[in-house]
Length: 306
Image 1 (cartoon, rainbow, N blue to C red):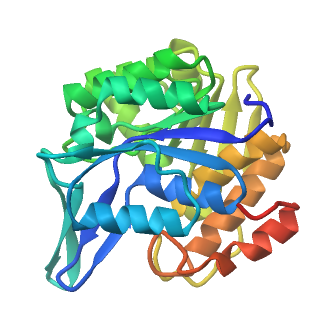
Image 2: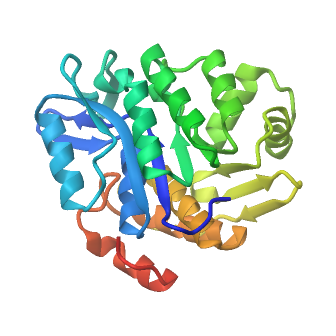
């Protein structure tokens, strides 16, 4: 587990703007997790790449306004800042993750220099930003630059993953976070054959030499399996009014990371992560509209404002 010197976390991957017919909303799992970590008093360093466009201006202004470190945000003169086109169809939404975006071209040498400069105590990464060779090389450079725990937040987004990417990512990770649906997908793709979820997680843990497998189950709670065979389960909580589940998983992940740095017990980590994720479901969007949202959690958990 990471130590508690500075709480520096390198978050590698995509920044995405969800483009609705009438507005743009910044997001992407690495950005969402980074924003939460900043509010909880850690030092997140987002390693990504954007275009030279209005969306970059929005991102830098937002991060600067929140006090977030922008050192790892590279600029691309050719490719645009990542976008997800949101199409309104039949009373619902259809999301289209565009290809050939700036985050597909994260530069390896620059990433290496940022890693050496900030000396992260934990690296967070996913699969979407590995769909292009250039960014895969950058991730490899980051992971070789620092010998610290690595957390894989698998975030499967069709059609942007395959068996090769999954195996490589799992082999690079120490901690695996995924939801129950993603666990079922991975079991099928890797043909693991185990019957129940705990057995499936145990096979993944052993095969890829993981230290922890964290499985979230939506309103049904979450559970954690460690490399000593311990299973910590969080049962389903009380039903709450839900406005939007977008970003709840990222909220859970952020508090899990926070708990590692604060040396909370596994039971405490799961309980607090679940409470924060549930609170996020009570607002629209993945990111709270103001810092006031975080204040009750900081007070309850004895945290300083980031």
